[in-house]
Image (cartoon, rainbow, N blue to C red; front, side, top):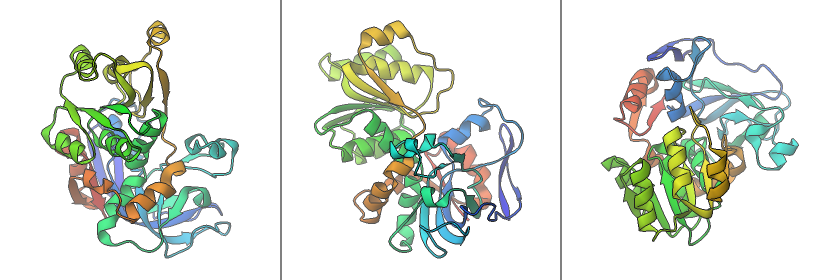
Length: 338
């Protein structure tokens, strides 16, 4: 089959790779209905994250089960399934605590920007839909695999409650999904930091009540002004830079919660600042598997439409254009169809 390989910064190729096959009795192989480019894929694409060598790319996926190992019991060929970017057994103590991305037996799932994908630990990783979905539901279901699940974790980890005032730092796909998630969890006011008109519009569709274009000290001052000097109850940091983290901590009220779900690059924290800020910090790789059944239900029942975050749709063979468009901020998120 032909699949996506990142050879070096800026060099994405769609080239011949071996077809995936069952390697362990707990594996499944799925035929993808859709996949996409993640914001985190841009770190190595931009040369910010080191690469050991050419890498198969992609970790967001949904599709039809084609084959399963002899020990797999929860899914079967012909079912439509969605899984997380970390495979987990969903039975270890960390999984039982709701942190499947720290599973004792976790395996990173990669190579999903392809027609087919091997998923390890299928019983603990994959969630089946009630039936094969209508075509228009596929983008939303794909979003649950990572970006919607990550946005939901951002809201959950920041303790978003009904009536809360929430600030979202970042207007990329995760920030937009965090906005949608905060709305679903009952936030009364959602302030989204954004400088891009198209993203601002989608943020408002997903529940944003206020848009703040300022950054840094000016951005912090603006949110403090909007909240009458108090700050936000919950701040959802969805970027992963030093500036975004400092901004998130700076706009939280004393006793507030800051979640961080953007993969950190060059982020360091000032212990004394944290000590006197009185904020709760919680984040990490989103345990998407914890939320998947609920998020799939929300999409399946058409309660929400996270699929609108895909503003560029391409054939999988044009994956390199998907990377370019996201890197140049011509697209929020690129959906790829084999």
